[in-house]
Image (cartoon, rainbow, N blue to C red):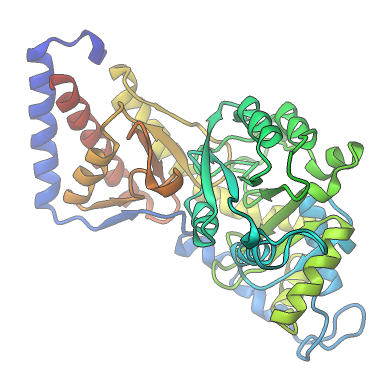
Length: 425
């Protein structure tokens, strides 16, 4: 029944039913966790044989990967990430296991040394701002916050960030030095940027010459469906920037953390030749080189995009039923109430849920009392401040399917109780 049409007796009955259901779950002593988008054990086991591929330790250039050297990565791994990110391998720098670490370094390098040689380091400026499409990825916001950079929220729309707002802020304020984006299967909304949004990013006219787009393509190959027509497709940002002569304006990132092993994957970044030389020069002070043994292991296990797609289809077979469980639970239990909305992604790792305004923290607390841990309400906004107290990130990947079904029952009853309480108040 539509909550807008419920009378007081209807709301009290719904509240009582939800309280009874949640009391029952509390008595069971559940310990279910959907706080983060972690791969489950079955996913991690998909690539268990990756270690067997490495019997010889020379890359295709003849370099022994066990030794020092080659800061930018093995040629095989650079070629693979070039295909993933849609750029020439010469523009790819392959790092360690974490692309987030490379983002942290890149922001920190701009803060201490400047975006390019001769440009003012950000720490010398009175104010530095980053645009943060929200709801978004909390760890992005944490990086810029760490450097005392002001995080400025920008709304996410159905086809990507609010480009009217971004264009205005970027063009009018030289303190705006960057923007965080997850362009395909965004965290947490699952949105893939439309071609128009990508083209508008490529056509930005920033007031700051050292403005940069941090294009975190974390879910570039993380489709839930095998059929091409059921996959999202993202326009190549670098190609669009080149058309406008603005290729220096972007850093692109990707990793295999959710392809092979979460802590033992490979991260990479790609950029214009000018950016590449500056990052390489400064990174060379921090390290002699990354784990090229792991890079070569990955390149031999996943030599091309066809091999990568086979691995990702294994992930999809595990993840798809979990996403379908979440979406079917929400549709069955909450759609008729007409007080909530949620994303229906075709890939990535999250479902973005919007509860009635002013109830997200209450829902998360009710779930925790019943033994289900969710990402904290507000985490998807800068400084943990969701102005509507509405958004909740649902992460279906880690729990076994049987636990996920129970967790969604708890979640839906918590939403019903919080919504009824709000309506009665």
